[in-house]
Length: 608
Image (cartoon, rainbow, N blue to C red; front, side):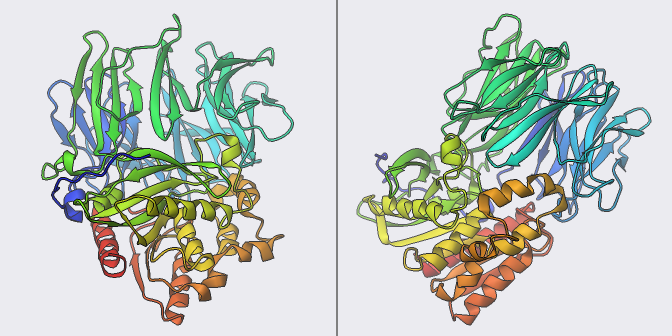
């Protein structure tokens, strides 16, 4: 059952008004504990900013106009900081240092070198990072001295390992090894002996993911779903090889990390599509009581070096992410940002609700329902929204596009079809080698759920999604052409054969996992083509709009080019928008505004 729709008149807002709200990500506390670093797109694209905890004064620290800036963190003992940036969304990220004199220096300057920031050393003299400059397909692990910016390779990656963590004494490196989407192992590399210890020998499909080392560098926490549906925490004792259970919850534990002095362990639980953060005192075993907040979710909780201050991000379905600080000693909570455009009344936005319905085989499917704001007696057009992936999840965070559509009179049901994460390993693997088939049936059942709602016009329902979700849009229109009235395809895969053969070099370690989930394009060509909408595009007969970034390294532009050409050949109405300065996801506000305004115009013409 769902709550009754609002029948009060609400104000309608433009896409420009929605994107006048600021999006912020990440946060890092300065060494003195009085400033917080974060990334925000206030001026149209993500840049680095800092805020004073004491008086809220905000300072812009980078001034990029072209490429998004994502902060990595303050230096351990001064106000320098690291950030990552690529070129036009090509995902070839470099690590930069911003010095206190304003100078910016590229620390990983290789033209085709992709870098990833892993974290600071406990002694504060270096940081760890990954780079594929030696071999494009694998990330080696490096340590860079922050006094000289000289780097040393501390692990040469020849087998496609994924980095986990470094022990506080720098002797051990935890690594993950993906065998398939449902099976992975944890290893520990001893830098002194150069031996690789296998921490999780097992039979069958079990996922094991390295997390953080304990303070004494003798124990490693890792996530596992061994004998359980959901991820829980175990500990591996390096010198005995023994493992023991550590923490279990009723849902997936998603991550674990420690405060600087290891007084607290922070972990996050994926509770019914929302993040629940818990902070455990490692000495007493008690949970820290976090401040009372409105309904929503805490993200990216950080401790200051002296562990007296907490900062975190917080959002909800009706509130963009904001930055908060919390003084442990005084229990003083401060909201440091107010990102919602003041022209928007939060009461006008849709309170998205987690609902459940049964699919064709009685399997329970979870979804997030954005009810339309309609007058008594009116019926709204509706959209089934499909998340990215495969294996992603629609969550109860703030989604300006879905709020924009809901505010303008559309119901939206963000479906977590089988194959989505967050609902147990059986559910996660239920669509393996059945994509475009069994997961599509769940989306069609989502449409039927919408048709059963009294305020929905069951004859006006479309489907929308990006990446894997965009593929599902194409699959729906190609394989079940009479089910949906329109499609909104945001950089969706049209030809799995090509996409799986052309995945970026740095995804090499996940290649086999993707093949086992979708299909092997070299040995299962006939099957792969059977689930690729491009080879069945002659059956598409409903209007569609396509959005694509020209620099997308995951879903190449040709994927959209060819499906658009096929629809034009069918004499099917199709609109095509290409952003020359974007990749897999749109970073620039201007592009999001132009693209999503076009989406609404398209829906107003062909659906509403």
